[in-house]
Image (cartoon, rainbow, N blue to C red; front, side, top):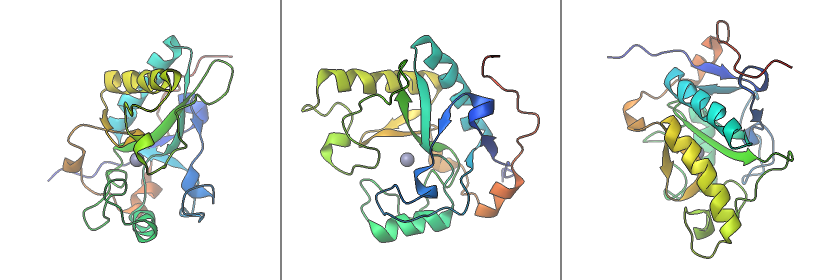
Length: 197
Ligand SMILES: [Zn+2]
């Protein structure tokens, strides 16, 4: 049995991303605060891939904005209770790949500092959230394809129904992580990858 690895803390300062954890406040589809803290964690393997995406994004003149990453089991249960729709929400009895620490929800910020138009807000549970939905304007398709390209090249796989969700391949093979594991994160020793001012 694989030893459970600690999660890695993702920060704006270390990683050069924008973190806006939607479940740490009421600005999510439940209207409820689901997290006790607003810290962003990923499994070390996912963090390594994220670094590749962050670096590649610079070449496109865009920046990553993260809405969610590691999600405690209690939060998954709250989401499921609010919307038990397996097309968009993982049944907590089976476990979310977010709770494995290997999935994240994100979008892109353009060179002007504005979030790119992805056609729908994050967590919109309609066909318009599906990749390559035919009714979307070309500019939206291109924006989504930039995110898709960055994340696939970095080693993630996409979710057909959610333009914002990416995860490691074979994510279900990673163990579910007890929420207490987030207290054993190892931010020390992580090298910043943002540019020097
Ligand atoms: Zn997700």
